[in-house]
Picture 1: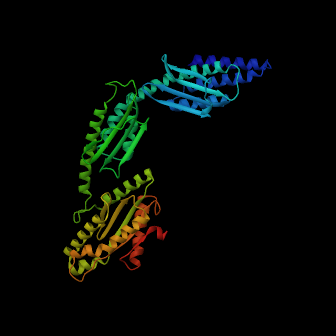
Picture 2: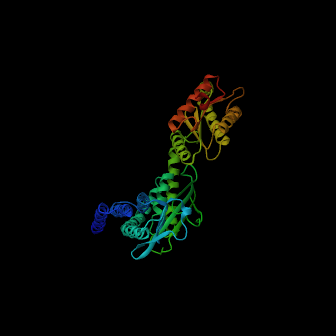
Picture 3: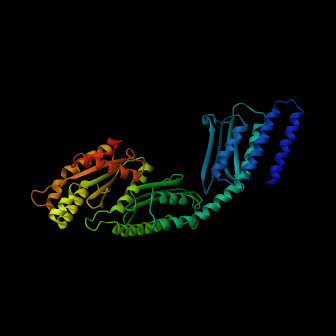
Length: 429
């Protein structure tokens, strides 16, 4: 590398001296060309990845050469292809200056440049640029292959970790590692599992040409789709079948963990979720909504004058009312919604995808049908109603804690207005 820099530096010094002693207009262009080669030679000694290297090379070339277009394509069998372009690609036509790149004596892509105006000696200069780029590619390709070898251990580690902590972020990290496996060009994971707030699709690298077959596991399904290079061979990395087996085992462990967690996060009286699970479900739903630009509804409910039921009819009847109300909520909402007893006679419902308009209709229906649903637990002449507050992400609040506070405030307003009704946080904003 030092000899290359020295050689280019000598060319730069010679060009400067020639410029001082000559009036030839072409010397300025030659000086710029020499400076361009020097900058590319420096780039090869920096720590960078292939994509950044390609982008910087195009930036250097277009800085020193007036280009209608410039395209650098790196295409090596076991590494995802990279193309970086600048300018009007329609200007690339037969006769454009196209120069091949090489790594270890094999084709590794091309450099295509269309100058704005003809430049004397430009073809020879661009051939030098391609040679300089080829020299820099060698070390970067070796580093990329080493990184891909390390990705095998990283992939196995991430798959194993899924069994303990399943999330969209963890799946995205796994997809990125899968796309870096030796000879892999891209990966996609589609997971629909009870450990997630909703179905998740994550991808990295070049899009797989074909989708894999769904694999059924305890708690849901997943599909692994991979795109491999033409040079992929058995033994270079875990096979698709091995990867599917490992992921299936991890998802099965995740389901076991979910069941244990659910047992610890269930209200023993009503059988619905407790406060801890409700807050976790809300955080997961808001996180998912942030990623896919969706909404989340949070309904805060309180049984009206419930203390009177306990004081006059006894706690056994009060418990029966709580159970009846919990069942009523479960029957009124969707399967993917989370009904929870927040404490005492307070309940909440976490509703992914619920907005203000559909939320209004749902809460109104819950309030109107609560007396009939609770009547089975009460003696004749008694009527149980409920009040509610509705807050929807992102209109009412931008995070889970603020959403709970907004719904609680709306519930307080509903109770203050006479109970047996609801308010929405958006009305109070």
